[in-house]
Image (cartoon, rainbow, N blue to C red):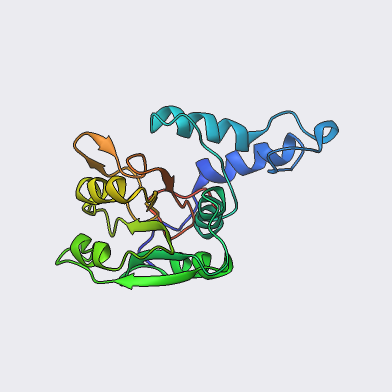
Length: 193
């Protein structure tokens, strides 16, 4: 491991404080056991930082992708287009919703080949998941032009590019829905989620 996954004294103290306050990290419930709802604090701070109207913390990036798909009404026999180079969670979330993943090619930056993506649209296409890989913005603006033409919502899987920008705007805030991950393998960690 590269070292970022190590937890230092500051993080250990923060975790100790949570346990002193009641020891629960859930976003709701257990009111008589705790003093603060840190998950809700995190959601508010994240919403402000990314200038996003809504922010909802869930257990993982995979769960975030599934929630995004469900919010768009994606279900059985629908199709969701995504790119060939990504993490397995993108495909898992599509399949878990009962939909069929449609894989398009990638460009020289390992991001979505928009022309190939558009060629795969059918009447069953209910969403497109673009994955911004390794801190490099995918062709989100070009994709948005086509998606608007076909009235297909875009989900940004931004789990690999937290904090990256395109045209002074944060990736993950440019499509219809954006998903971030804060597990130990990501740029910023919260342990999970």
